[in-house]
Length: 547
Image 1: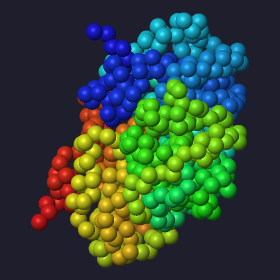
Image 2 (image 1 turned 90 degrees about the horizontal axis):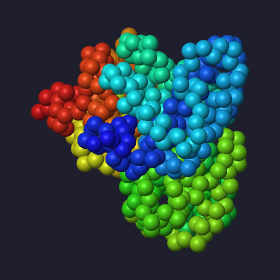
Image 3 (image 1 turned 60 degrees about the horizontal axis):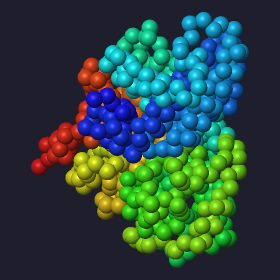
Image 4 (image 1 turned 90 degrees about the vertical axis):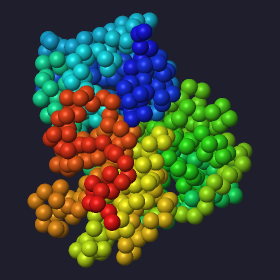
């Protein structure tokens, strides 16, 4: 039977092989097809922009932002709106055709760079340009590994762009690498090299975003975040876009409406700039996959600024709003391009009519251990290592998800020796950030750096510790890597770590389905990439046999 679709870009893909009928994420075959076509069209325009640069011609920021947003739109759980994706394809083809006219040399361009057709033909074309259009399994695997890394990079670039931070070298590479996935002359070795280069620019992209966030909102600082609720009606903000949150906080000031974060937006509380808002109450709920019950009990409207959307229940669908790269059919979308002042009045007016949130937990959680804060505590941390109070750091960054196998990370955190400290970023933290793991000489045993993009902080911390201890190799540090992954932002973090020379990373709950056996073998042999086993196996591996 012919596949209705094929997608294997996330960790929960069906059977760890690929979704062929419906996405586990909830996207249908039509959305999957249009996403495939959008990625292909983005490869085509990137081929042209890359050639234009070689001819010494300038590519505008608007074009750079268009390509970045396209890729972001296709990230897992970001946009389920077929019509919105179709509109992006048309915008991309129109922009591509204009750029094509600027090229002096049009010879040897791929079909993706020149294809035009009536919309009635788009469905048929989409079925021919997806993942399986590359027949060689290993080439396909490497092309997809690069593409998914670029999707993650695009997300981080987009967040920096909205804060008026751009890196033309990152944009140029992203487009060059995207175009390279069309090039049938590249060998597997060429694509392996491109994969590591993607990691290099992943570091640059995350550094750009870190600069954008900290220069705008200040360096994150140790913060205790309330996880209870107030009595006022509220708006719940999820996703990753700090600028969207800022605009909403400005517009809700003095309205009697409180604002709460959810999932990956939790680290917003760590930034000094947001602490001036008295109606910024706290964090509600847990990781993204618990949305259906937590959005139900919140009672007020929810603003999704990016991924991760779970297809909503009818009971709250009319109070779910999207903006930016996110979208869902039947949910109101708040428009606004980079630099625009978005109008959130519809959300605010709805909130005023809603009941206050139902309290689902009480207390607080502590975070804000990004690189500036940890380095401010460097002497204390170094002393704890030198005295043996801290024997090892365990990087447990990445993504959370609904699979029961992810309970491994909760159990692993609880089983860690008392002289081990967890370094985390991303929504993986929700597996253990509410456990009472205590501290070591005043240093919490869970150091939360922030969002998934703040994995950059973990790299900065590691490199600083390497310098302090006078080590030549980052792998000589007392740091183990036991990372959970889910979608493409985690892929670029992984590639960034590989570029920095980090080896022996354990990745779970499963290894990516898009790694062919031969590509997986290369990663295992060259970088020591491995999956996870039992909790006991992991503890013995990282810490030796426990008495």
